[in-house]
Length: 95
Image (cartoon, rainbow, N blue to C red; front, side, top):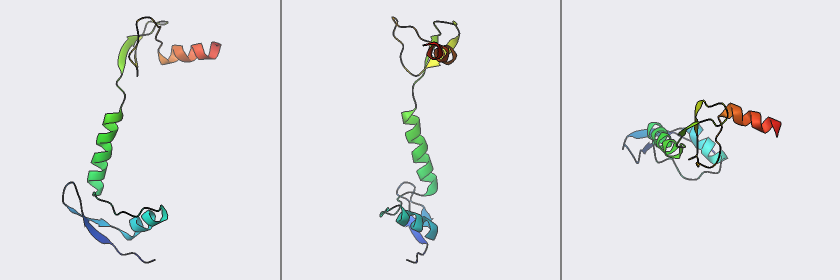
């Protein structure tokens, strides 16, 4: 099937952008039937914003073994020890 460049309008910024022949072939190969709704810049911005939402909140702690400051991706409880990455890996090796 022969494809031609298509000019589309971005749903976010309203600017025109090209849906190229190569992009159309890629969409067809992947079985995608809808045309893109956003220009490259708006797609990148949207992806970057969704990545920020999914980033883990880090918590400052003191390692129970070596007493150095570190961060962990979970809220530590007071009754369980917390280890830095190095001490944690050393514990796994010896178990």
